[in-house]
Length: 173
Length: 123
Image (tube, rainbow over all chains, first blue to last red; front, side, top):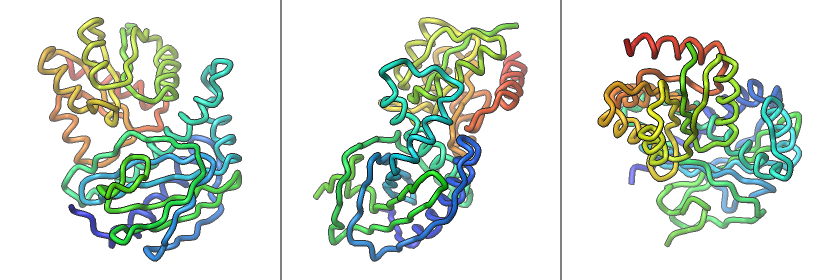
């Protein structure tokens, strides 16, 4: 296990910067600000739609982006503006939009870690739509960052070591 | 000259956006694939002029799929289209046999320039 919780603030800063860039470039949505809650977090609250992906190698974190519905809707409208969305498949495309935005943010974050020689693998995003609360097991580290945009909030949770949880954030004892 | 293209990506949104961009550049998308294994199968079946390949995909990632395709078809022109910006990953992709690398978000000018470079490198 290569997890080291001291990397979390650096990953947070990278995600905030790339979220700002990607939301502006892909959906013309401005980030108004952010609050961070470091490693003392004892439980995580997942909102309407959550996209979970893992950063591997020395980072070894699961990262969950939990979106308010208003932000998902704004992203969906902008991101799908130039493609055809078949009737009845709007919900699928809303989920795909959230997944693609997170995949792009995390992929670009890896460019902020050029000094790490090992490849940083990025797992395909998993999307869950049930709001729930996850309590921190003793041997895990939780951190959280709330990013406020002009169209709603995305709450970014950091869960490590990655190996303690499956891709849906279920604890694997 | 119009190229016959296969798009390998597990995101429906990216596939559709790339399809629009490719057609805008005058190329023809002849197939799509959403996993690494499907990408290999699609390449065998269609032998495209160009394949775009995502890195993070279910069942087999784009790097492994690229290496497998190039091992079987050394002339294959594969271009990574990914958000993965770590330099190590770019080097690993080129080592696997990719001829080019485009970072998302993809814009038509960036795509057009990289296609020209990939086709030139393959000559």
